[in-house]
Length: 194
Image (tube, rainbow, N blue to C red):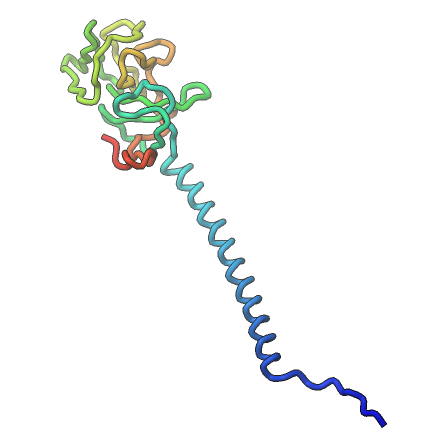
């Protein structure tokens, strides 16, 4: 009589390897799930920070040369406090423009034919301007900045269309996105913007 081959119980090493594989699969799923949740949380926080406090802007055009160049990426700090010399981003129509604050509400701006700027009869020190120019100016000078508005100009005075033109005019506080404070691209210029 032949004996039937009985299915034996698995060897202990086989059971241990199956148990280890099951634990690994469970641990892998937990780590993957927590990583995905962490990435989603970080992305949501980054979007909130970029929207509410530090909007990221890319520079287009050359109206702010030599301070900022086309293609650079900058961070702006949302604030309601601006002073003369600050670089700001603001909405104009559907566009986001970047210019420099020259004068605030109530200040009197005057520009001579050589491009020298005077605020309240005092010459404005502008080390950031490499070449002064009268530029596109169709406002009556001297000009008093209206309440709750800012007089803005680009650093490249010959080509910038800014508050000197009635096309743009002075910018209301509600239009201002924030103060440009930091350059993140290109990496060789990474750092605070003066």
